[in-house]
Structures are given as structure tokens and as C-alpha cells.
Length: 117
Image 1 (cartoon, helix red, strand yellow):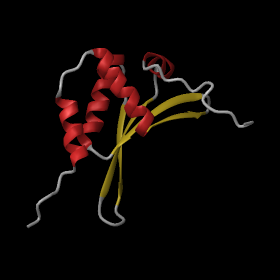
Image 2 (image 1 turned 90 degrees about the horizontal axis):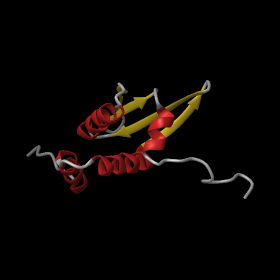
Image 3 (image 1 turned 45 degrees about the vertical axis):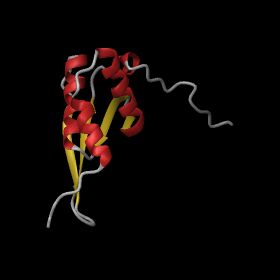
């Protein structure tokens, strides 16, 4: 009776991360994931990227992809919220070569918006 229901999006995400892709497509997926679930943080003149996911397999894929493509060791962390059931969010934190990674993924924050408009 306690059967876990898997959503369609979870099934699709798991299928995508198990398929082999060429580097250009992997970078495109990583850039899209960052646009949807990532943050660019600037503090104390240090740049940092944070990727977040509620799926452990997706977070592991992001971690391994960054490690393999850019030859760095990102940090891996998680947070748990116990309100209304247990929810775990996984964080992949990149603190080195941030500008090079953004450039390689064709992600730019210039000319995206203006406070004067």
C-alpha cells in the first residue's frame, strides 16, 4: 500500500542523465540546468556558482559533469527541511574557475536587465 509514486519529470530526468551525449550537448544541458536551478553568488569579491536539485541522482550527475568537464572538485552539500514531510535539497557548489565555466557554458549576466528602465 505504501507504493512510492514517481512523477513523469523524475522519469525523464533519470533517463536523460543515463544517456551518453557529446560534450557540446552536455554543456547545453548544464547551462539550461543552471538557468533553471542555479545561482551566481558574489560575496567578498569571490564568485561562486550554486546548482540545486531535489533529486540525488541529478545532483550527482551535475557534480560529476562539472568535475569531468572542468577538472575541478566542486563541493557537495545538502539541506533537509522537516516541515510537511521530509524534503532534501542537494547543492553543488563551484568556487574555482567560475568565470571560465560561465564563459564555456555561454552564460552572461551583462545587458540582461537595467534598474533604470
